[in-house]
Length: 408
Image (cartoon, rainbow, N blue to C red; front, side):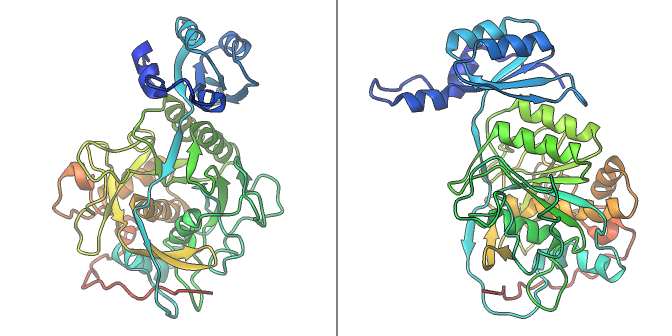
């Protein structure tokens, strides 16, 4: 990972401190002054902690990278002083990322539903061949997961086992600290691994095990530092895949370091490209090479109008009008948030079949279906689970969008 030279102008621009009035509360200034310092030495970490105006948090990534992170509140002068040190790789705002889904609509009553995206990427063909992701662990870095949802409870890691789920934000009125108080994480988890049962929906890898890593609160904000900690936790637990249906237009060298940590630990990181709907707008962390960046398609095999595109896009997946599990029921959401878990589930099926993370990534890209879009829109093409596993994927006849169950 190359060193990013963050200038004084970068820091001021990223912090957004230029035009605040005198009446802004102290708490707002503290929020703006929360930063992550990336150091390459213990002395650098000690120095950063010593000049913070608050208690500091530390995230040690040195097991797989050269970086130690220190999170705290630093004044402008202290940030500039830290940047002058040779053992400080970067100083970045600990800014919030957001989940990236575009819209929601309710569903209609239905029996067992094969969502159109699962059908379109031929995950159902893989299921018929017994390829269901069994034995693979997927960390869902998001708003949490509804642990009582009938489509997920069988594939949810044991809630009573230490470290199987974690939370870095409060979840008010929830059954567990890592529960979902918004619905977004549950929807993502359903696309990855909803159980193939007699009702509800089915996911890409319906026998994979999902873990809730709650970094986003009910209001939607997700701190960079919490996401880094979640990535490290998944890697340290030895899980196989992580899905990040969240992002920001602002660079984050801390997230890039976390992605490097995950790769070195043998984790397959997948991230949503973003919903800015214009060229050269892929967000972070998806824009980093360490993550597989996923753009979104619609039922007509065109790139969804809301999808971010750019040279960083690696692969495409269904993301418009996707039916999946939701808190207390089901919902249809649109966004690259919905596309990314299709690819995370596809990765899970390959890892369960014996592929290494690097082999699985290469296989997904080389077997993706060319939709005739540009590389900056579709990357390698539409993910194809059956083709990646070596099965016939020629059943792409007319795809229809079935009704989405509306309740439990």
